[in-house]
Image (cartoon, rainbow, N blue to C red; front, side, top):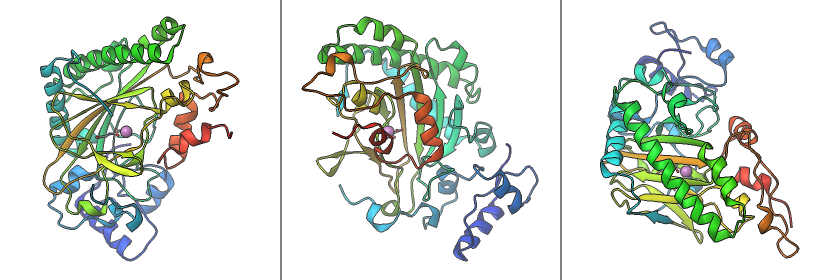
Length: 355
Ligand code: OGA
Ligand code: NI
């Protein structure tokens, strides 16, 4: 898949929407002005659309309709955090900076990494799951698979900006080390006897880095950067620049997480909820956008190897604490992600055993 929707295509798409024509994405086409609708519908599942960075650059003053949420889902007004974590400040600052430069590259450069395949080790895109989202979200992202040892993954990462691989590799290694320390502490707190063997598996488990870019948005009250969701992993370590946007659902209210420079937000993911048989709860969170300041964040998701089945730890299941979740694996989750709108806790809900 190659190429780019030009501005005329974008306008045509907007006009079709205004006329309540069937929805379409701006299509992928190598040819200038090649607006071939039938091709786009045949290719069907996934086409290149201009993401929020490109729309934001064009100085829109009104949010395109595709981003406007139904009234009940619009943001109203309204974790854990580690500091002194040992990840060097320059590694953190370097990654935020290289991420910013990546999202500033012309669209054709970024688009080389666009893929409809949620399993692709490197994937650039927009929204949450752009092929499935009924309403788009004001976010562009670059996903980098970053499993240890890193060398196999790094070769597939973008080579532009020229220092991206080196900077992101240093970050990925340091971040994974921090995850291992946090995980060891969590396993100890849960009273897991055989934690050495799980930690050995995690040393080469599944990790990915998600670079997120939330450009300034003309009408932030009508949309979101990311919808409410929980993360599919054991732990997420989230780095944000100094612009706020992350909100966590706490006792039914959205709390905004203050950005503390150089800190990581530690977020419990669905895997830890399942493994701990519900002692840890994965946290629902979302991202708000704003009209003046673009925001960069980097979410690192860490878990067991992809093929590994995970279920409640034996130590945490007994007569008084029956098993509350079915076993699951990454492949099942990815099929879910590819087929459905992966919002809220819907995947996790599907793994729950009714009590
Ligand atoms: C994510 C996420 C939060 C943020 O990438 O899953 O929740 O602040 N990101 O960007
Ligand atoms: Ni998340």
